[in-house]
Length: 101
Image (cartoon, rainbow, N blue to C red):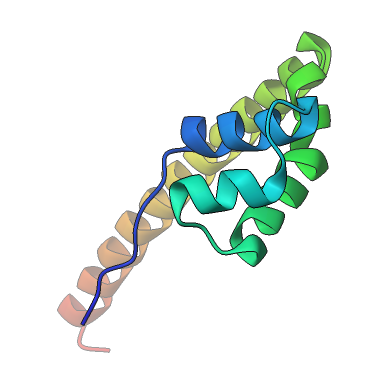
């Protein structure tokens, strides 16, 4: 059983950029590296679909990081509250068993 080849993201980007800049055509790249045209087309579509992320501003990245930090604080607070409730529950359970209830 043959194993699938794994290509690095750098290789994929370089191959697609060669085609986009006209250095080589799609058929030449596929022949040179033994790729199926469908695989290369998928790489090209993914690069073009995600190209806008390269130019994302620091402000938008900062907003995402701020939101992540806020969610992490919320998770921490809820975890602490849950621990308090668990301890209180165990205390009440032990008191009720001592009273015979």
